[in-house]
Length: 77
Image 1 (cartoon, one colour):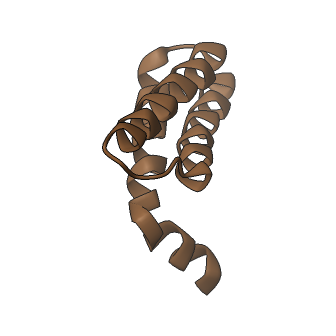
Image 2 (tube, rainbow, N blue to C red; image 1 turned 60 degrees about the vertical axis):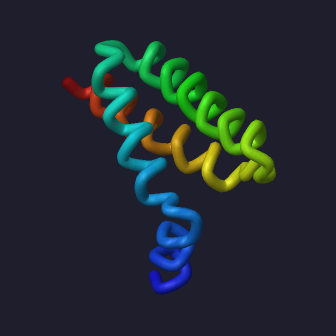
C-alpha cells in the first residue's frame, strides 16, 4: 500500500488520476470517457514535452486509469 501511495505522490500523479476521472465523467458515455481521457493525457504529456521535460508514461497511464474508472461508473449508471 505504501508503494501505491508513493507512486501517486510522485510527479503529482493523483492529480492526473482525478483529472482523468473528471474528464471521463463529463464525457457521458463509457467509450467517450476512455477516448477523452486518452486525449487529455496525451495533451498533458505533449505540454510537458514541449516545455523540455520527458514524456512520462506513468502520468499518461494514471490519467487513462481515471478515465477507465469513469467508464466503469458510466457502465453501471
